[in-house]
Image (cartoon, rainbow, N blue to C red; front, side, top):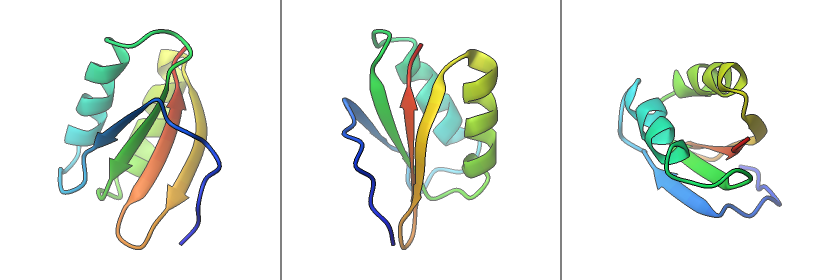
Length: 80
C-alpha cells in the first residue's frame, strides 16, 4: 500500500462499480467543477486503471498520480 501527497478537492467513491461506471462518474463530476480542481477517483475496477488515464489524456486533463491500495486504486485528476 502506498500513499499520495496530493490533496483532492473532490473525492468520488466508485469502489464496487464495474467499468464503465467509475469513468462515467468521473466524467459527470468533471463537467460540474472548475478548471484546476483536483479529483480523487476511488475505484476497485482494474479496468479503470487503464480506461480512465486514456480518457483523461484525450479530454485534455492531467493524471497527477495513481495509487494502489490493498483493495482499490486512487486516481488523481486535475481538470484543465
